[in-house]
Each structure stands twice: as C-alpha cells, then as structure tokens.
Image (cartoon, rainbow, N blue to C red; front, top):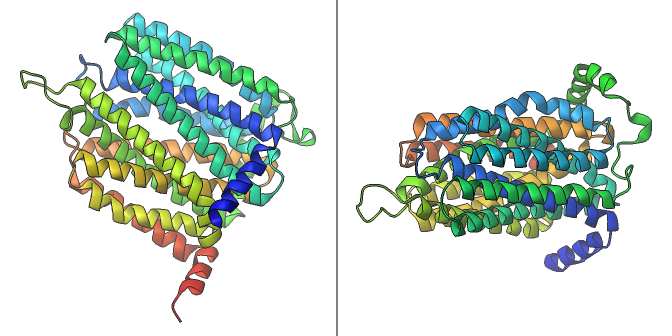
Length: 444
C-alpha cells in the first residue's frame, strides 16, 4: 500500500510543469557537479605521478571548501533578495566559464595553488545553485505532503545525477590516454553540462521561484550592507524553530562521519585495494580508480533506495524519528561491515550508509523547509551548507591525523559509529516527536 502511495504521489508531482522544469535544472547542475568532482579526484588523488596521503586529501578539501564557508552566509542573504531563477541561470553560466578556465590550467601544468584557486571558484558558485534549488522547491509544489515527496525525489534525483556524472567522468577518463589531457577533457565535459543547466533555467518565468517581490531588497550594495543584520535575523528565526535546529545539528554530525568515511574509502581504493603492478612495486592507480567508481555507483543505488523508502518511513516514524532510525542503523552497520576492511563488505556498507545518509538528509530538508518562512529559507539553507562543509573538512583533517597510508584504521571507524549512535540518542530523546514515537512504540 505504501509503495502504491509513493507511485501515486510521484505521478502527481511530475504532472506539475514547474516542478519538472526545476528538477531538470537540478539534474543538469548536479550531473555536471559529479563530472567536475571526479575530474578533481582523478587529478589530485589518482594521478600516477602523485603520492597521495590522507593529509594531501584533507588539504585539498580544505582549500576547496573552507573558503566557501566564509562566503556561504552571504549567498543566503543575496538569494533572499535576488530572483532565484536568475541566480540559477547566471551561476550555471559562470560555472561553465570557470570550468573551462580550470581545464586550460590543467593543460598548462600550473602550480597546485593556482589550480586549487580556479577549482575553488567553481565550487563557491555551486553553493548559490544548491541553496537556491532548495529554497525554490516549495514554490513549485502545492502542499506540505507533496513537499515531503518532492524532497525525496528532487535532491535524491540530483544526487543520483551527480553519481551518474561521476560514472560518466570515470568512463571518459579510463577510455582516454592517461595524462593531463584526459583530466582536462573531463573538466571540459563538466563545463558543457553546466552551460546546458543554465539554459534550462530559461524554461521558467523569471519571478516563479521567488522570493516574494514585496520582500526583495533591490540592489547589490543594499543587500551587502544588510548582510550582518540579515544573518542575525536568520539565526533568531532558526532559534524559534528548535526542531529544525536540532535536525540540522544532527545532520551536521552525520556529514562529519561521511567525510571521515570518504577519506578512508579514497585511501583504501588508492593503495590497499589496488592490484599491484607486475613488478609488485606499487599499486596501480587505474585499478583503484575503477573500484572507487564502482563504490560511488553502489552508494548512488543507496541514495535511490532512500528516495523510495523515506516517504513511507517518515509517515511511520515521523521526520525526526526517521533521522534517528537512519543514524542508529549506521551506528550498528559501520563497525560490522567496515572493520574487516575488505572490498565486498565495504561496498555493502557503501550502499546501506548511502541509504541512511540520504534518508536522513531528505527528512532534514523537509523539516527545515516546512519550519522556516520563505523569506528566510535562503539564509537558513546557506548556513546549512556551511555547517556541512565545515563538518566535512573537519572530518578530513581528523582522518589525516588518524589514518595510516593504506586507510585501515579501526579506531576511526569505531569513533564514527559512536557519533552515529549519539545522533540517534539525541534525536530520539531530544525532540518532542522522538519522545512521542517512543511512547507510542513502547510495549504495554
């Protein structure tokens, strides 16, 4: 019955013309994100001439993400003053141009700092796009019930598109002659898809995605002058929505765990699981890259499973309760499947933890979107993204201190499992919805 309801709701969503158009922009944007991110990974981690370490990966993440964390709050204030459709159009066009510049820099063998600066510019603009897509979603659906389904379909479809883009980038890279030419070609592919994403935004009317015209403060200078005041207002608004604040905090901790697992998986694929060359002298980066691509695909299947099961699960456990269930499942599964440090159980973990992480993300997005006013959504989602990035980079830094060169660290996996358990406990006993679920579910 639940499955039939999911299919029915999905059909209703896809009948909404503007939802389909916004979804197309998301799919193209995140497809190109996947291509660009894998291009960076292959250039930084899997280049044969580079001896990658956990510290190098952490440094790359810090260079690409931490500077954005300083800019992130500004994106929300501006998004709450700019027309979101125009932001989606111009930001995607800008990302296309910047990606093309990055490809040229790869071909020119420029110093790493210049390459990272160019890649950072693409990543920074990306924050405007993702925050704008999330803030605009309630404008293209017609009820809160369908908003839950929209949060299952839209972000998860975007994640699957990013996974597909990553898979496409893996295939293109493996098919081309190894070297910087292959890396640059993949980056240019991402630039082309970014261009298509920008053009797709033109299918929607300029004022469709809000914010409401009466709340728009025209002019960049006026917007920048009110950034501090706007952020303070956004934080005050969030403090008056404790459920949204708690679920955002829980999702931030889960993002930290995901960052640690990402670095672990990268190092395992780069060194521990890559078949040695015939001489036995060193792992073959191409073998590790292919295995990483498969792991990404398996994790993407987990995201898809989360999209299917989350609407039913939130009806059964509530939105906050489903976050607790996902975190609790991750706490149990991570040590069982991860501690052997073998490819087969780790791939199973990639699927199940992908499902748990995306399920919690869908529920968290729904809580935040339905709890905050439209005029504040841009700021709240920008702060949400900042928390995500700081947690992700923080996890990479911790991993750099703990992980050995081959990526096998039982201590790190146990600590991450404990953090998942802490999230499950905090959501269950720290929210009214969680306590109500315990009262209803307790044996009598």
